[in-house]
Amino acid sequence: MTEINRDDVAHLAQLAHIEMSDAELDRMAGELAVIVDSVKTVSEIVGPEVPATSHPIPLSNVLREDVVGHVLSQEQALSGAPDSEDGRFKVPAILDED
Image 1: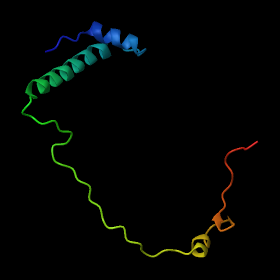
Image 2 (image 1 turned 180 degrees about the vertical axis):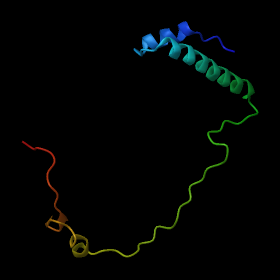
Image 3 (image 1 turned 120 degrees about the vertical axis):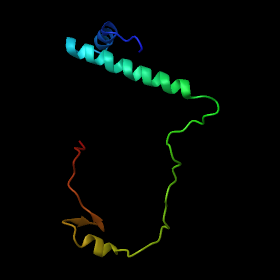
């Protein structure tokens, strides 16, 4: 197991301005050691004959044809609007422009 001890975690916590209790420091030291060991194991397996991948199976985009369907006229689109002006939706201003 990799040697990540409580003092290392306490030092990192201090650098990151994170307050940790004694129990949290002990638990985190163990968890970080497991993570470092796991990365080390994976690094040992990887070699030139193993291709780099981001996903275990190939990904592909599934696209459909872009077909124009039923289109509303401007009047139909604005018919349900609470307010409109010059053929456009009118919405309340949210920014002060002084």
